[in-house]
Image (tube, rainbow, N blue to C red):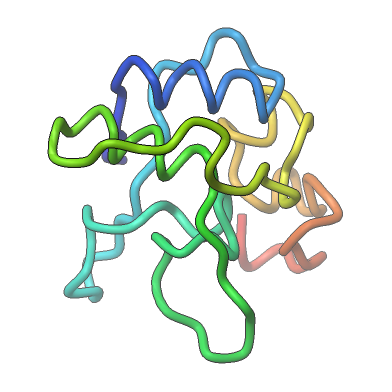
Length: 119
């Protein structure tokens, strides 16, 4: 697993996910994907603009993504810009740390199916 951990990003992610112990936000990692390490993990940041493209869903720019951009030093972000996340909002550390399906059942209502082949 790759993760991004920068000061503003961590502050924003901790607030929006309601998880004070998060040490980074997971990046996509898939051996067959050419964009591995360049996008947020879709299971966590589902419809953020920085997840892998999915034409079926409207993406938005989250405050978390803007915080990461500000931390890069390449961008200046207007305070109050971006959207609060809806996907996983206030779901806590478990939402971030566990995989989608755990012990044969879905961990959360978002993005999960009850299929033991995904454990």
